[in-house]
Image 1: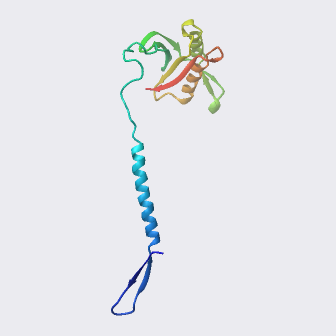
Image 2: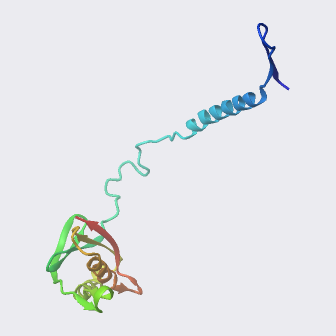
Length: 172
């Protein structure tokens, strides 16, 4: 066992104290081990990164064709539906924003059947055979019940038993 004697000679009573050095040595060993492992792990966290893109170097036209997307903008009196292919707008039309309210008070449920019908007509068109990305644009003043009703109307049309639109949300 590692002990250290401390004695005092001089006036007064002799002091003979033993200090146990084992806990200090244990702390020192743990600290050294921690520092060594930390140095090793910090070198493991580095990644070799390169700006090279996999694939042939002359693949300028290899990008997949853009998917069509439908953008539904919530307005005060109408919905504006815009069909886009990439960044280009193919066509746009307006749907009146006429809410149908079922129930009363806090249990009232809002729906927009005109919007759901217009999007179902578009989903059955042959040029929209694949699942289309749908984006709902709204401002921050739109109430949650109206936003939920809009999202329900967009997600209601189906094609071959699955949703016709892949829904996402954009706040303006």
